[in-house]
Length: 289
Image 1 (cartoon, one colour):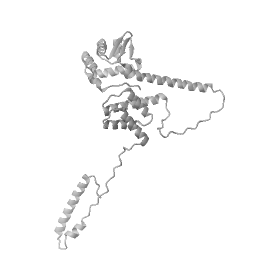
Image 2 (image 1 turned 45 degrees about the vertical axis):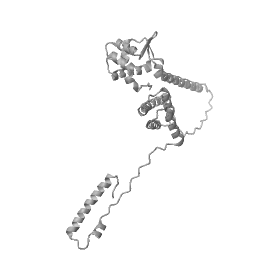
Image 3 (image 1 turned 180 degrees about the vertical axis):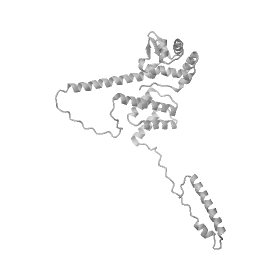
Image 4 (image 1 turned 120 degrees about the horizontal axis):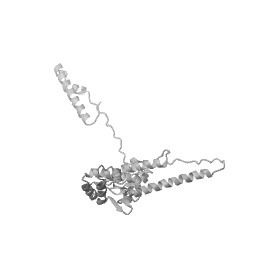
């Protein structure tokens, strides 16, 4: 699954304000159509964002623009600076910076895996003797998590999804925009530690008021070498408090001359005080026996 950078500043950016004004739609509506167009471009534009000789009608369709004047939609995006027009047709402005570089890296990885599989297959085909290969003993790497068998593309999809979640967490925690380099940093650390660790480190960075990826790097490096020390100790349940049965009270404050009415009054007062004490202990979180 591929992804693009989406900056929080887009909502009030001068380009969006101008294009929304030309089209007579809300900022939120135009943001939605732009993202649909960019998602389509991930699979259909080249690394420089060139769309070729696509027509205004086709561009409106892929962006899910419902208006009856697709030319107006296209011209508004050109006028605002979201799309450039050159001698070869239309081109998404600064596409290489925001998505083309990532797509180029994805294509290079795919081609590298293709060559590796081809070389592996050729090596096996060239082996003509019947001598069995001696299996090589491999010891598990205790410093890295065990990854179940999967194809290279499946692992790549999972990593890209995790990077996307971490990018959103970084923007929430620090209030800063995620760069392509920071996305690569997330992917690198995901090969070493769990996504939960990276997410916790991002939140620690935000709590400290830091905005630099270097601060995040130092947290993860410290956790990797020294272990995590931020796990809160288990809360200890206070020992139960025994409430006296009141027999001592009767012995010391009621003499042999006490009447049955006095004993009954004392018992009633004792039960009332006992109930009040239980209520106070319960409010404090202490379990009474």
